[in-house]
Amino acid sequence: MTNGALPTVWPTVVHMLDAAARARPHALALVCDDDALSYREYAACVSGFAAELRETGIGPGDRVTLLMGNSVDIAIATFAVQAAGAQVVPLNPDYTASELAPMLADAAPAAVVFDSVVATRVRPLLDALAALPIEIGPAARRLIAWRDRPELGDRLPLPDPAGLSTLQYTGGTTGRAKGVELAHGAVAVNVAQREALLPTAPDDERVLAITPLFHVYAVSMGLYLAANCRATLVVVARFRPEAVLDAIERHRITLLGASPTILVGLMGCAAFGSTDLSSLRLCFSGASALPEATLRRWETATGCPIAEGYGQSEAGPVLAFNPRHGVRKVGTVGVAVPQTEIEIVDLESGTGPLPVGAAGEIRARGPQVMRGYRNLPSETAEALRDGWLYTGDIGELDEEGYLTIRGRKKEMVIVGGYNVYPREVEEALCTHPAVREAAVVGVPDAYRGEALVAAVVLADGAAATSDDLIDHLTARLVRYKLPREVHLVAAVPKTGIGKVDKARLRAAVQGR
Figure (cartoon, rainbow, N blue to C red):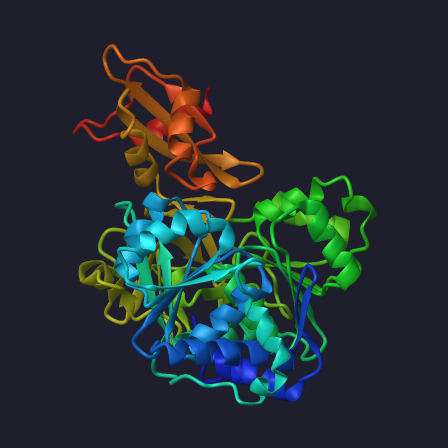
């Protein structure tokens, strides 16, 4: 299905920020803790850092990795790398060295911008990359310092719309992260596509960014959305329910980008009932499936509707949303954004489309779709076929084109909005000398949406406890990839041909 015309489409998101700075130079653009920037100061910081990158020889064809937590600096860096003509590569700063190393090697960045708090982990990795290290922190330097040169905001450099904008790493079923190549045009048109279904009020929105700004969801539904409607973007450094509720009340937030985990956390906070949430106009939910009970509870308590949507890194990321004005179907992720077609096809052959109401693999095509995976031609050929992006997700369409997600063809588990692939956790478990075999599955979790549970068979004569194995994983994996439970078992269930039977295993661990 495809829908209507698009609002203004900027050549790139940097053009969008430049227009905002010209239209509202003195309006408050960006806030995080004690830092605040007007749009002119915001553009000046972006312009200054972009010029610095260009002076070091970084430009079109280069990549710059960001290993940064939520701050005004990561917002500046994201736009500045693109303004310099380079490709921004946002990575989770909480990743361990063993997780970062293959992604950095694949990206081959010309520079790495990183927070001081991760310097001891990151600097040893840079020695093998020949990448320019740029450390950010109170004792190092701040990109916000360029605000003292507001005149730089009058000449924001603009990249070539045909160039590459973003290299967004996403998980792979083999455990290897895949780098999604997004062009400037794809990223910019997706902002307009989202705006068509979820129109904002220009010059009259205050947007709260809670989820990490290295994540495609926060960038699309926070960073770019705010610049597009010339809003104030309030950035929360880390998710703490009390701090988020305080920010909503104090800054009179109108648009809240959230996830099921965030909504459950806010409603479970003691301050929830006493916080003034009357400024909220709309809440977006993404990153993982939203239980209907959570949606109903939030809307009853706050009076603020939730628009649930669907997308993935490979699609820029937004593919569908329940419209802000029009029919909203709870339990669905809405309709395709404009200039986008979504079809349901046969799980095995990929052919279709299937009839209304039939479940199958979701495929999509539109101008926001990726160019491909970096350095992975066979994976690119598998995902992009005959002009379609095969998402690997299972869903169905109703007679009005509303999409319902039914599951995932791939073995991906979404924990608190983060994609986790069991194979990676299984491989990490098997590096423990006492482990003979490990199998990991995702199970429903009331707080995180899904959680990981591991079943481990120990080697003959070996001894280890569940806590020992969690400690082993903690040194190798970011926190959200850690299993909620580790069960020591005599054997894991297998199919007739000797493969681990994940369905039986999931049923077994849920029955414990």
